[in-house]
Image (tube, rainbow, N blue to C red; front, side, top):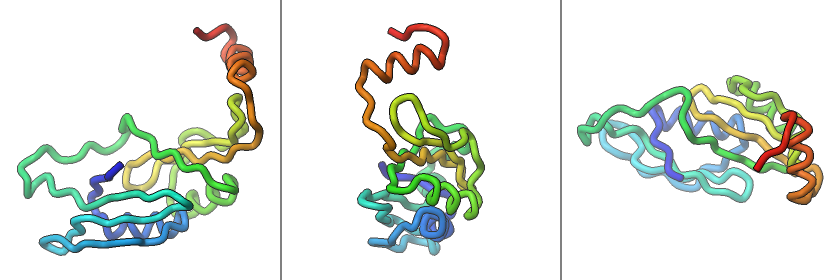
Length: 142
């Protein structure tokens, strides 16, 4: 995944503060923008750069309810959650134990991206997850 961000330098500062990201690489672009940057969060790499839609005569990026969620597995979901909220994330789905065995919740960051913060708390078989989902949602799922 490569994110196009309005204000990539500020986004880099944000992910360092919110998720403990380590900056791996940064390539400056024209006009003080960042052409490409890579950060490491836990054992995962995330690539990003500034939005260049105007320079490349493309529509501007969409903000808000994007059909993408950055799913981040962490060793301590509560600690990561608290850190991200303190850094300015808005709670979209509270952090809670889920029927599939993860403690998981969704946050929206100040740049408009949604993050799922998750920690596996138990191993659940597919059959058990399906039974729990049916119980939670009041019926069977096919």
